[in-house]
Length: 71
Image (cartoon, rainbow, N blue to C red; front, top):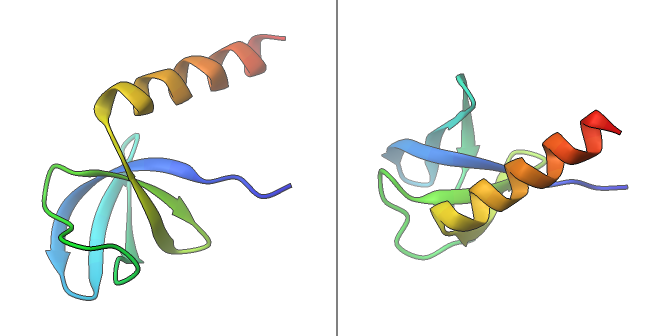
């Protein structure tokens, strides 16, 4: 099973960005996406940002992960 993890973009140095994943900062490639900016939320999969998501979607993903971990 492959999972993508949501993260917030904190710095962009095209074609890379530094993202914050709940306090863990990682450098990822963002060149699959258009117009990535600081403050955007993206889904990360194997070191690549594959999709932009809204803050509401990130909160829903976090809620679902918490539910899974509690079961």
